[in-house]
Amino acid sequence: MELEKNISIKNYNSFKVDHKIKKFYKIQSKEEINEIRNYLPKDEKIIILGGGSNILFTKDFDGSILYNNILGKEIIKETKNNIYIKFGAGENWDKSVEFCVKNKWYGIENLSLIPGSVGAAPIQNIGAYGTEIKDYIYEVTGINLLNGKSEIYKNKSCDFSYRNSVFKEKLKNILFITHVTIKLSKIKKFNISYNEVKQYFRNMNSNDITLNNIRKKIIEIRESKLPNPKILGNCGSFFKNPTIDSQSFNNLKKKYPDIVGYKNSNKIKISAAWLIEKCGWKGYKKNNVGVFKNHALVLVNYCSNDGEKILKLSEKIKNSVIEKFNITLEKEVNIF
Ligand code: EPU
Image (cartoon, rainbow, N blue to C red):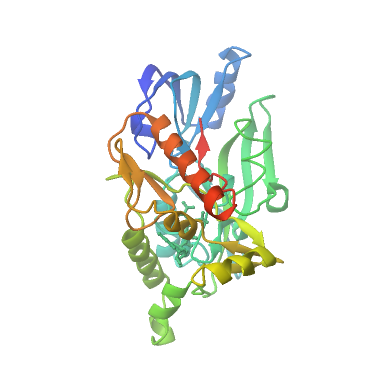
């Protein structure tokens, strides 16, 4: 295992902020996790880091970062209709989607181009264009850092919900996810329910709707709306889309007929981007941080090294949404 001391986090977070880290361990295998456990001080502060695409560092960290670099992929089971692929948690998410698409395994193509690692996917139950990873996770394997034991979480034990799971709650920085097993279909089936995708394929012959074409379309949509973190620091959606009751939604609809809302069990999920845009933040830029010009839910770092500035901007945005709509936005991004 590699250890670096007093390094900058800049190359390990997609917001590209620059804070100092006391100790940075690059972990390549599950055996190394227990090795590290043996000599880390009992009260050591720990952050487990994957692709760094859903975390905002706002200060220096006087503890140990355990960077997940466990690689590899293996087919562990195959039935007539399904395939089970076990990925090392440090594998790049999009490369893994590409691998599955190339092999004609159906299920996660709508999750193309989401930044980050495979290990992070179940943590925040990544979702886009009508698909959530919770529907394709077979099991999640990891080492419990409190006792060094290996643990397996079958899908039902992951407590998945919208952008959340047991790994983001009580197992946060406790379970070091080593592998994620994904169950995909060998039988052709697509999810083209997202409006832009539906429109695109509407007049196409069903033979032209292929995994490859869907992946291409999803990539095109993402590239048109969301900034590339390699070029402009960001963490995708900064806030979650809030849900409100239908009475409140109807009241808002009277005042703002263009409000965007979708039924979500007996509540209405509304667009946080719409709320933020209505508060006038879209395209905002000050002190080298801002709100992306094509999507109001994405906070961007033009060239600030200080994550605190992004956090402060997010608080201003949150307060203005409370003031105008009496709705409290919840962060999707983890803050340190
Ligand atoms: N909208 C605005 N202003 C904007 C952008 C969007 O008013 O600046 C409105 C539009 O009416 C649009 C609606 O919001 O129809 C929804 O926008 P979009 O389809 O882009 O989706 P979203 O709800 O903003 C969610 C996920 C994204 C995911 C997309 C596509 C969350 C927090 N975000 O965004 O995930 O890619 O749906 O399915 O649920 C992420 O989590 O980092 C992420 C990018």
